[in-house]
Length: 247
Image 1 (cartoon, rainbow, N blue to C red):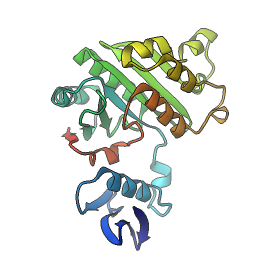
Image 2 (image 1 turned 180 degrees about the vertical axis):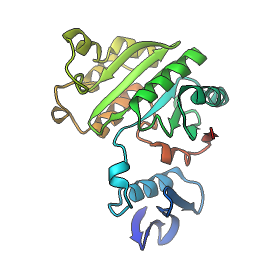
Image 3 (image 1 turned 60 degrees about the vertical axis):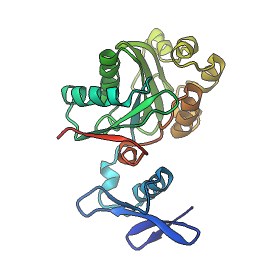
Image 4 (image 1 turned 45 degrees about the vertical axis):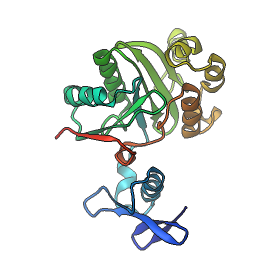
């Protein structure tokens, strides 16, 4: 698969044939055209367009935080119902995407929560409280720190922040509380504690750790979560995803 620039658009070619294209729309947003719905082609195009340094006015506006909510269930319909009911009560958002089940989890990508870690945490707590299920919120904050919160029945059971004092100085006890608890995580997800312990590293500075997106991928793999790297604007193109419009 080859992605290349063609005028104002990016195209994907396979075996000499164009299978998709994407470009920035004049009023904002991305116009995506696919020969057939394929997640890999859609993601390649969206990332190419988003990385385009010539996009108008985006450098100042584009947030560097991104995150998603993961609900431990295979019942997509139940999650869609919960999202439809809860999101308007938690914050104002145009749309939320609910993925198909993957590895025993359903991912939720929200237009607002994707780039706002505080709202992501609120959404995760509300979904866990409403469904009684295990829920993880996970993502990258300001392009520098990886953060997850594990909920069960609306209660926080574990929290991890790769740079515990990323938001400012903390008392020693609070800083320790932001280190992953592999035993709790293993009970919630079935992950091997040793794997979680080796990946969920903490440091005084982001410079002492791998790049945040790389650390996120490693952590998601240890937890068994899929799609943590996907952003809201990409999520609607996932196979069998449901888009819930709120306005």
